[in-house]
Image (cartoon, rainbow, N blue to C red; front, side):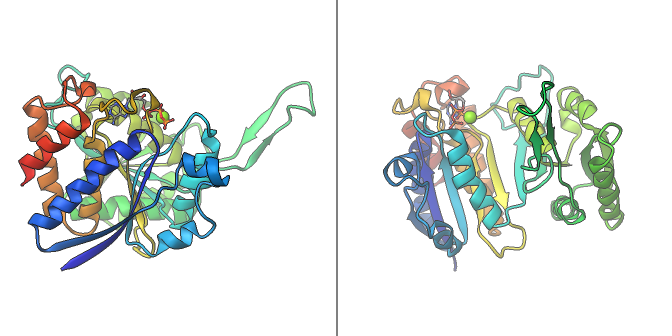
Length: 351
Ligand code: ATP
Ligand code: MG
């Protein structure tokens, strides 16, 4: 029997509300499926912790987390703590320390979810975003004070290794899933240094996978195609910035924040990967029982799939779809149920 040692970080706001339900889901899975064991430890490292200790986690926080197989994360954010603190002192150190250089976002239209596109059908693809370098670098500077003309330069850093790793992950994923094409998001006609390197290395990797076709689109055209032909994609590989934008566009096509999951993956397995809903702490609905738990359930499903349990992951998704089709949803999806009631609907349909 496989044991997964899981660190749970509920975080703030609705992160805590949906984490309770995800942990309940895991305990039910364990109870009914005797081939899996999940040992969970929860850590309340969040904005409250910061206000008390002036840091987001203990000094040995990362070391503590490194002993786990995976991290299940809720959401972080509190108006009393600036965003840059929670991002740069919590989320980013985890991603960096554990070399989670892949951001994995399934864009899949579940049964019962209406897309804002009128004649969309069968939207089901995956965005593989480079998560560690690229446009989101802190290299650059500004001359605000030194000249009368305000000027700022922001550098994008792309490396052969970074591009090769993310592209290889995308092609391996396509191979595993028996898919036939990978689409690369580029802009090498205008961003002539970094994006030409991107194109070159993506092509080199693609040449190693004869059965999978590489398509390449400029990011502007690709954004338009997301709206016009979202059912034609299978796997998309993108840089940090392009992947960030495409991921939110994609998730808006298939139901939005209440249901969108993500994973920050360390592909070598040397360090824990982290699974989290895309949404934040949503302070406007905290304590109202309105938080949709589906994004957290789906993130939990991605975690189980990561450990080779695609079977349980599918079961979770079926239960989610069946609840949505029956109209058993929270207000963000048009229903009237609470977080707890939706969770119970999903649990009943699973077991
Ligand atoms: P943060 O600063 O932590 O990112 P935020 O105010 O930006 O928080 P988000 O969670 O990013 O909030 O989402 C924006 C809005 O979408 C929320 O204010 C909320 O109304 C809605 N929302 C997000 N997640 C959910 C959810 N799981 N269920 C229902 N509504 C949600
Ligand atoms: Mg937000």
